Length: 431
DNA sequence: GATGCCTTAAACAACA
DNA sequence: TTGTTGTTTAAGGCAT
Image 1 (cartoon, rainbow, N blue to C red):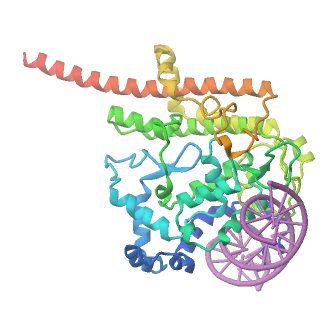
Image 2 (cartoon, chains in turn green, brown, orange):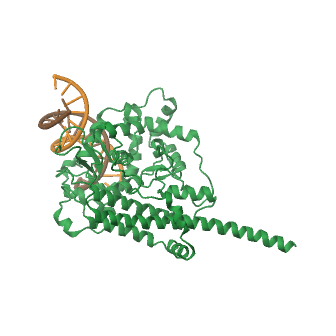
Image 3 (spheres, rainbow, N blue to C red):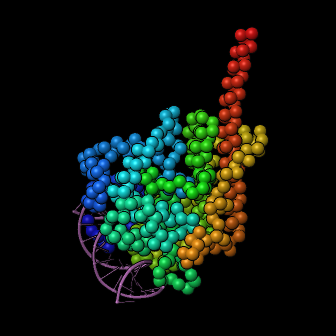
């Protein structure tokens, strides 16, 4: 057992799936870290009683987790959010009672978040409109979502900066031209490592995600989320979704995510971080968890230990992988076939099913406003071809989404028609 | 026991 | 000068 310095970047980068256990480990450590209890305000009596639960020997937390786990899922970006995908198999409706929220908030306020700093940073960045944040904003986001850090020693900020610097998942981008060093650089998520961050986040089975989840400012600003989709389907049609439907929706999510990645890839400028002596990104090494083809030429030009210039082919292969995941859903194929035979009216249903290419990314506006940071530092709009490709895929996405929605409508219509027909036939029989 | 991930702390430099 | 930001090194805990 040795310090990190004893590991070469090569070794760290080659570690397969090292981040998989991070989630459970974090949960484990969450209860074991002394500061998690120390930082708890004395007035939080309820939590004081829970502090005893922080002991590993106490399995109450596990009980809570398992009870609540079904209520949570990941958003389109893999970010934790309330998921309507609960209890897909059954008909039980989870109760998001106020007490549930309160408990989670108390937990998050007094316990250390079960997320690594990498994930916290990632979530903060991904929640930002520009998908890039200065360190200060990252601080704010974490503080806002995790009040624990308000009372925690200030060392966590150092850890955040440490992670930003060393973790390959994060890239520093210029705030203004010719200004590499200095205050207030923006940090964004490296698109190549984004899927791995998402995966790592998804592997966090801890339900406290709800504690910091804030619903979109405007009604579902991201209707493209398959969770939203399935939520709508379930709410509107009051039926239990089949797994294939959920899979299809998930596939749509993947497709959507890949498009966004593609856009990020198109738009990200050359990273400023030309060399990192050490890597903390091995846990999110895309080669570990993603069976994506890497561009050989790119691979030869790029030293993974130093930097990541992302080739188009890599993103394209991701898209292909996502596409294949969709096409592998036989039920969806059947749906497509069926839908194409019936009508294309379903495309109307896809109005709210935009990828972020259309909606979230507005490079003209600077949501940071007067923050002094240049708008969209990750933007490079010169590659028209790639954008066209993205648009093309986006169109396909909309089509597929419309088909899914249409399927739901057809399913419901058929169900109601069948029931109506049955009732009608019964009446006729009686006559 | 070796390895690797993660956290924390500290020091230092650059900059506003 | 002070505070912030970014980088780097070191150490230790924990899991596999």
